[in-house]
Length: 597
Ligand SMILES: [Ca+2]
Ligand SMILES: [Ca+2]
Image (cartoon, rainbow, N blue to C red; front, top):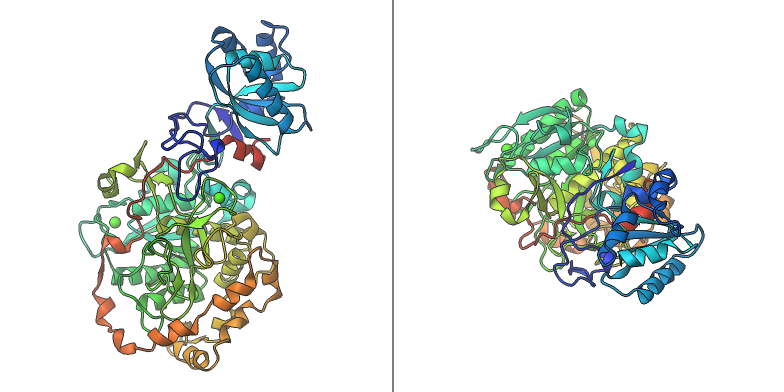
């Protein structure tokens, strides 16, 4: 991965300048709203300093007392504008603690007071600090023998597979992107509002099939809504500086949603049928459903659950959004298909809280979680779901409906479990790229056992924790989270393959509340960073199951068969979510990750 210098405007205050508290997205130093100056990502000049050293000599000839390497032009700028402020990275000798470099900066500021905030961040991976200094302070520092380089902390454009956003690094896609295996990732089916396949910069020629199953009008060709393109871009965009999780995956667009965000249950079931029929032709191994039905459902009766189970048993890993209907972080239950299905992977939306690490991550307050009506704990896993930026078509109705969320170059900044789901779908594709023979159960096991702990999140709100694509891809022998369920998967009477025998399961579950523990008996779970014991005891709750799923009279078939899904039932717009111009990766984070080094 290379870093190229460029100016790429950013308008967001960053965690570089202070750790924001939960729910408070402004910088502790800049105050609410921040300054309209931000450091997007680290200047290439810093990381390329040894190679570029020759280029610096000519400028240093203007001032022989300068001992440190300076970015080309920085010496002249500092000399001509000694009172102006510059955003720079100051590096000390290798092995010197960053605190010593910080002391040098403080000393220079004491000797030559001026504007600028001084040290913004001390690095751990390298000896150095990010700082805002005056030209005069820079010249003073440059004469010190223990300062090796002062370089511009300018925004850059990342080339190759990379992102200016934080979420791919939080989910640890960066080391997978460029591996040869990533190019063999399977096709992901996006069951949504369509995909703007002509968006070459995002999708190249990788949208290999587009099918329109929407029975509601108006439904423009491609993606009249914008939701599906956004989801697909998060899963598999190859766009410079905005890569999706699995840019090597091909995409199949199954359009079930009209331009106003409406869909019919029957169309979504038809989408599952289509995938089942054509999965081998297009190598579809992952299907993403960033949507849910509008009627609460039990796996006993819901046809959409049965449809996604059929996919699962036939080798297609199904990923579903949990939904956006929790209130203030309280358990909402996960009561709608397909996210309520115990076999599939249901995804909650996390707030990254301004950092790549998961120690501060918490569930977005609207991210649905809790028990299904059948007693299963959902979601299984979390992924970033707030302030994500991705492409939408220029004619998307979302653009006109959500003007506050519009960003440059026909992109939007959106929040929702809809957008956490494709991150996990991409991680599943990356796992399958390295283990093409794995079943959906194995993929789910790898993703769950490798998830990172979220000690700041309410227990269960993000399942076992945050998705870690690299760790999941490295799992060798995944435990099976569906082991207990699989005892009730049997061949269908019509010879069409396995089905979940809900009646047999219910008989056992009714008499033995510990039936689910078989899923968690594998010793492999003990290698997880999260507490497998607590998930084991919570993964199935007989109490909620007993009270709800047996009232079969309430599962009137009429409640689902003809229901249309209002846009509110699509997890596309976490209400009241204010834009902050994205959750962008910061220079110090890239240094910590060793990117470009
Ligand atoms: Ca559509
Ligand atoms: Ca974080």
